[in-house]
Amino acid sequence: MKRLLTNLCFVFVLAIIISGCKGPTVNPGTPFIQGPNPVSAGETERYTLVINNGNISGCQYFWSISGDAQVIATSGLTADIEFFGNPFFPDVQITVNVINCSGGGLNGTYQRTVTVN
Picture (cartoon, rainbow, N blue to C red):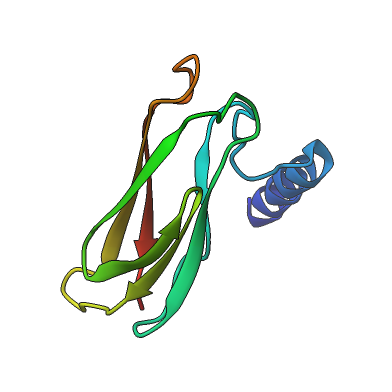
């Protein structure tokens, strides 16, 4: 029985390798927040709202934080965020509200959770 299980595990792992398993995919038209995760307390990191498809003409970007961190500076699609670190609540939610885009297609709220070590 042990040999059978070992062979089945090998076949399963081999099937994963052959199929080329990859991480989660992102629709190229869906904006997302890119930047490091996790981060260390005391670090300042840059995050970017990545827009692969769409008209960004006229867009306004409003960055905000929920958690033990603060936005230091923003410049449209990027924000520098300082992380303080709270051992009881290590997760920080980064939010970008996008409004007034030409055509309205990119208007919306985009979020990402970052863990502070």
